[in-house]
Length: 150
Image 1: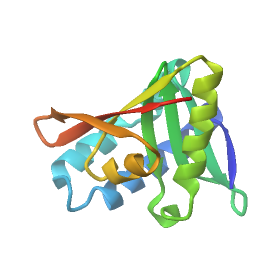
Image 2 (image 1 turned 180 degrees about the vertical axis):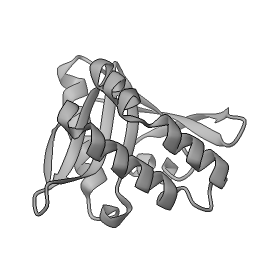
Image 3 (image 1 turned 60 degrees about the horizontal axis):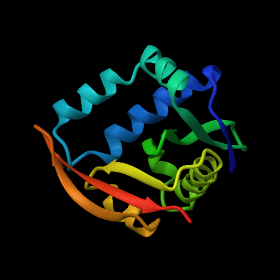
Image 4 (image 1 turned 180 degrees about the horizontal axis):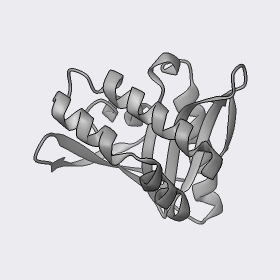
């Protein structure tokens, strides 16, 4: 697995991977309407703008050069952390998160923060995050979590 900084040439692959992940991983935890609204929001232009303001890293499968994971950092906030369903559970997310921790430390960040979905809560706990509070949304509840960087 190759972890590299995302660039504009990755956007189409990122969008495809994200939409697949939303449709597969969110099934049963969110309504089909919410999932499709999320897929509609993640367009080429949406990700292009995000690449301009966030530090994004992607995991690339060297066998076929496909993007199989993404993670972003803006200031101290971890954003858009997803792994293709066909590559979950084999350490892709762990490697992506390690890269973000290094990048955050390099920028002087001492505490990471994330708004995690219920699906992601145990993943962030396994990375050492602490639950702080719930964030009620109209369609679901997220979890504000933090991790001290030493």
